[in-house]
Image (cartoon, rainbow over the protein chains, first blue to last red):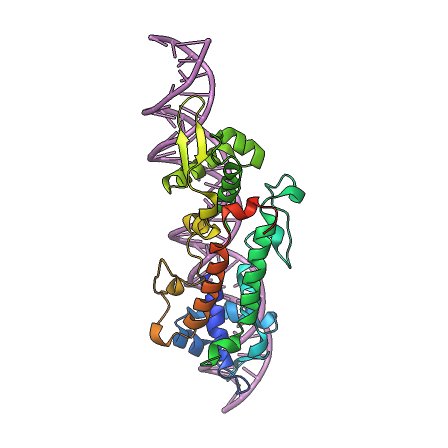
Amino acid sequence: MSKKCKYAVKALIALAEHYEQGNLFTADISKAQNIPKKFLEQILLELKHAGYLGSKQGYGGGYYMKKNPAEITVADIYRLFDGNIALLPCVSLLRYESCDDCLDETTCALKREFAKIREQTRLIMVNTTIQSFLTPEE
Amino acid sequence: MSKKCKYAVKALIALAEHYEQGNLFTADISKAQNIPKKFLEQILLELKHAGYLGSKQGYGGGYYMKKNPAEITVADIYRLFDGNIALLPCVSLLRYESCDDCLDETTCALKREFAKIREQTRLIMVNTTIQSFLTPEE
DNA sequence: TTATACTCTACATATTCGATAGAATTTATA
DNA sequence: TATAAATTCTATCGAATATGTAGAGTATAA
């Protein structure tokens, strides 16, 4: 998982802890989570564009959690920053692409097993939400 | 998953189909699987050094499956070429490293959930072997 | 009007990925 | 013994990606 994606999850958790309690400054998240500020700005902006966060500009502005943290999955965030969950493009659920080295996909020996792996991995990641990180037990 | 790792799995499947039936030429695997020959040479050599394959040099030489295909897991091959199965180094089972941005690992909000994700993913990949790709059903 | 904080685009730098090149070594066989 | 075939090993290379930095622009509260 890229650092960008990891930073995104950390920032989302921090913002989820203040869900429906106003906004946080990028600078404060940056310090608390040890994330380079300018890099974090880009990340928060992307999360906003994707609909997870809202923001307020100007003096006293900042970012706040817009979507319910229980409805934001690790799969969503991983896909946003790191791409496919599937290990091969040809078994991707949402972004299918044929493999460029594949001569005949109908007889490809890899598809069946890697589709299984993708599906199991996907289920785990879909069932882990930002809320999951906040609750002490489950 | 890198192309290198995918090529490795494809090559292993091809060699597994001739398990205990002599060797295959790199050139033939390269053609059949559409893998650049010189790249494949490196991959097969790494697989040999890791103990999965054996080879015979010189005229009529080639590579053959040394280990039982049912005992070579996708997790093994993934780790060899692409590194950790865990999404974060701090939850890696075999190659633990602390995250460089982590201020206090004991209070890290990410570890518990990402450790769960790693364990589930690991189990799937350990339970998928080279033999799994050969058998029509399961 | 000023300081603050988000918005947007461009750039920089290091590493990794995917692949190629070529020389060295080993071996069967003609 | 010469030769062709095949693996072995190291170096290199270009493109893409990851991880940031920089700086100008915009919105807003006080």
